[in-house]
Image (cartoon, rainbow, N blue to C red; front, side, top):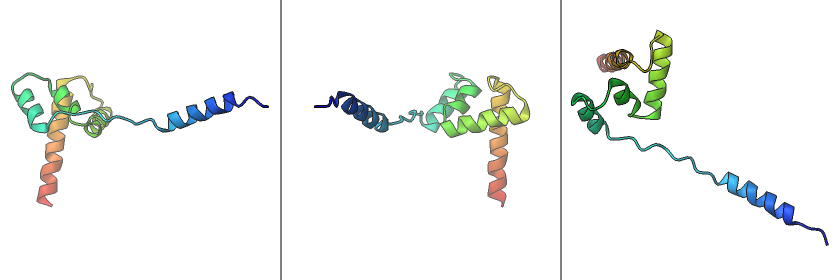
Amino acid sequence: MPDNTDNISNTSNKVSSQNITIMEKNYPEFDDLREQFEAGNISAVDFVTMQSDEMTEDYEQFCRDENLDSNSDFAAQAFMDYREELFEESLSN
């Protein structure tokens, strides 16, 4: 009788690797972040990057496009200003 132990083991590995769930980060509420930023408890960089993965990706792309250091509060403030301008433009259209 053939030994199917390896087949069973390989099948188990395939099934378990297909059931991997990617966990999303739990981000703080925007109002909580804003309060922390306005109180000086977190930096501008933290305020931007703690909002969402998408916001962090947009910020990093902005820094690359503008040749800015993504670890600087100057860059984070420039990004916030840029986003505010986009928002205001969208309201006027």
